[in-house]
Structure formats: structure tokens, C-alpha cells
Length: 331
Image (tube, rainbow, N blue to C red; front, side):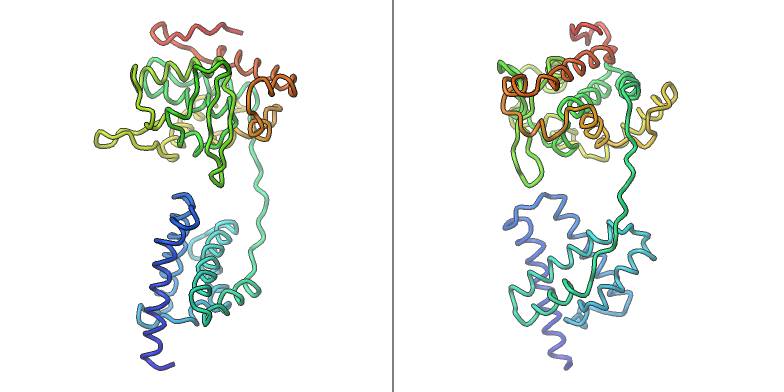
């Protein structure tokens, strides 16, 4: 390949990659910021791999995306970066998505996507073992945070919401004040889930009281309707609380709770609340189908009895001081 033709390919591939990551993915496909960040990470890793092989911004060409090059990159991810098979597959999916876009913009490059789709196979993923939680473990964890402090109150509200609605952590952290309808006859929350699908989750009386106390302390008497429910103060602004911040707090609580209950997993993560609720017959599929509490009580009487149990469990676990007393009867 002549030098001029190679440089033309390098410029064209770089331009199409820029358009894909900065225009096509965030705007046209309406992907979440997490997806965009994952795609950017995959591109950066692939560029870093090519640079290790001596490829520069001037020598980049279509051959750099051949099936053999992609397979070698997967080996590099596993051996040099100790990536799991699942992570490798996610990175590979991002590169295939890029090649498909490049092929649609210039038919000359369509062969790259076709070759990658047929000759570069996904790695086999082992199903992870899920470490479940018992009811004793849940009681122990919820009893650790100190509700007399703002941080403890916030963490109780987050864990209680996950526990009471079987929602994903990002769904919880994406909630805004206007997502909650606490004064409705049957209180509920509007959840924006995966694929930007909207569903409704009923809120139990104990959880409603916890949220009201939290909002009063953190947002005041007149909260901004567009403010994040759970936020982090940064330069005077209420920005979305990060998952990493929640993850660190959960590890602290898990360590303390494990000292009193061996059932508490030391590597506690937010999704275990969702798994626990599903295990005890109040699963996400039920919550997704809830339009009103009337539907819940009419068609799922046993599950409603489970929600009553959860309400009592909240009351049993919440050791509120007199200034933060919620007036919930104990078990």
C-alpha cells in the first residue's frame, strides 16, 4: 500500500471513529453515559494495543482491524490486563459495533465487520456464583448505619429503597424528587430502567416515611423537583451520587455487620438487595408489572403479605434516635 493511500485510510478511519463515539452513539442511539464510557474505554484499549505493535496515527489502516488482529487483541487483554472473559466480550462487542458503523458509512470497509462477525468468536463466560443474603443478614446490615447522622440517614434511605422496590443501583441514583409520588393514595415511584423503559414501583408505608424524613433533612421544606434524590454536593451543585460512593459505604457496613452475623457477605454489592427480594417472592418482574397497589393486592395477595413483612422488618432494623424517630411500630 502506498504511503499516500495509507495516510488517507488512517484519516478516514480516525474521522469515522470520532463521529461514531461522539455523535452516533450518544445522540442517535440514545445510549446511557455508562455505555458511551465503556465504548470509549474499548477504543482506547485497542489503540493502546496497536501502538504497542508499532502502529501510529499515520500507519493506521484497514488491516489493523483484521480478524487475526482482533483475536490477538483478545489474548492481549487476558494475558496483559488480566481481563475476564466477560470483559473481553464487552470490549470486542464495542469494536464490532464500530466496524459495523464504519462499513455503513463506506462500503469498502464493510468486509471488516463481516470478517469480525464470523471469524472472531466470543469467549465462553462462566456463570458467576451469587452469594445470597439471609433475613438475619439483612437485619444486621440495616442496623449498622447511624441515623442520627446525615450520612447514615442517606445510606438507610438508599438501601431501604433498593430493598423495598428491587431496583438496580443506577435506577435508584437516577431518581429525582419528581419521580416520587409520596402523597398519592397509593404512593409510588417512577423508575427509568434499562433501555430507558419506564415502570412504576409501589412504595410501602415504612419506606415512604423514611423517604419523607430523608427529603426533609437533605432537601428542605421546598425541594427542587428536578434535583437528584440522592446527590453529592460539588461546588455548590447537587450532582448525581456515584455508584462507587455507594459501593464503598456498603463495604464498610458489610464489614461491621459481619462481626455480628456470619451470614453477611463481606463483598456486599447493591445488586444483592435485588437478588434477595427476588428470592423472597417480591421479584423485579412483579414490580415491573405494578401499575397500582390495587392491582398488586388483587392479583398477588401473597406478595402483599410479603410487603407487610418488609415494612415490619424496616421498623425492626431502624434504630432511629429521638430526633429522627419516624413513628413506625416495631415488630
